[in-house]
Amino acid sequence: MFRLVFCFLILKYVESRTMVLVRGVPDPSTSYATTILAGVSFDECLARCYSDDFCLVSYGNIESVCYLYLMGDILKIKTEETGDDQVGIKVQGAFTTCPLTASDLFEGVENTFDANVTTSYQILTKETPGYYRIKYKFGYETSSECSDLLSYEPDCSNMEIVTQPLTYSEAWYVEKDLGSDGKMTIPNAASLSLFNEALLSTGVKDGLYMVGLRRHNILMSWKWDIPELALDSTGISWGVDQPNVYE
View 1 (tube, rainbow, N blue to C red):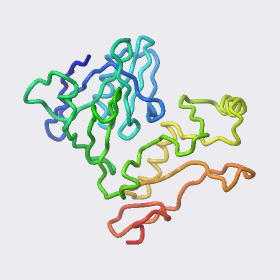
View 2 (cartoon, helix red, strand yellow):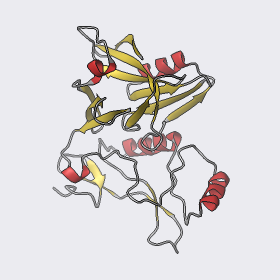
View 3 (cartoon, one colour):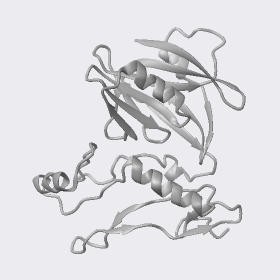
View 4 (cartoon, helix red, strand yellow):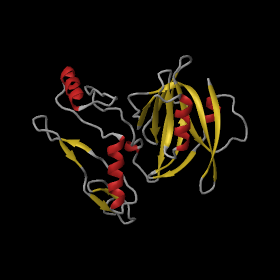
């Protein structure tokens, strides 16, 4: 099941967008909702995503909880034949003909998006059975080993991921129950917004940054790690240890 909701927004020029509704749910291992709103109908959730230039996917169900995913925050959507879970996917541009299936709508369509380092994205319906996969294209070249910089799937088999927001005490008990030797926290949307404001205040235009907690071994405590920044020849700021920073 899918249906189209055509919306038009006047920016510096007339730009058309389409919100495509499908039955499904964001894959929790590869998705992180930037905004979670309670008591919001799905129609309002859809409208909020549409009006946000950086929002790509909205998700809701009968519980009236709205989940909004920005560019890069979501990689896969699990499709469902029945149920109350609905996902709204933003497609850039208008359609000259009316597609009959979601595959006809998504496959082969490159959605131009010019913000930060993301230049476009595609929704792939045939690559992984039972899922829609979102593939991003970046404004700089990456090696074949790092073609998907946004993958959240862990490389080690003994890692547990808790996707919902937790207080420190809640996280401590979850850690204890799992038998974990330490936590890696992810900043919430408000923290990321403050970090972005701090970067902009320094005159930084763009770049790729890694912020989080780090420790050298399991006997040491976690410490915040905020990278020292350096500018390359084009004026783009990178973490000091990243390639091409001194080019």
